[in-house]
Image (cartoon, rainbow, N blue to C red):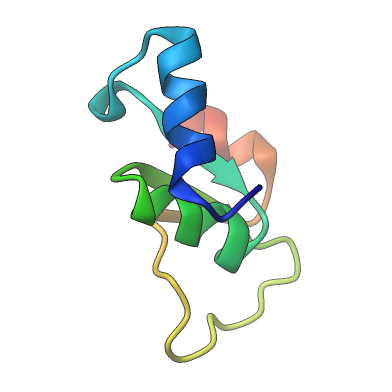
Length: 73
């Protein structure tokens, strides 16, 4: 289960994709962004509420407020 890096590595293996060619998109700093970082992947944090990232939380590669922005990122 997320945020275990094993889940992300299994997804990469199943899709035959190398980490530099993948990105994790999600709205959970701990599960999505933290799990991606632990697996060596870039991440996009979908911060729909526009809240400040709490101190000490995982830092996403990119932050957006809508999934529509992911297409343009």
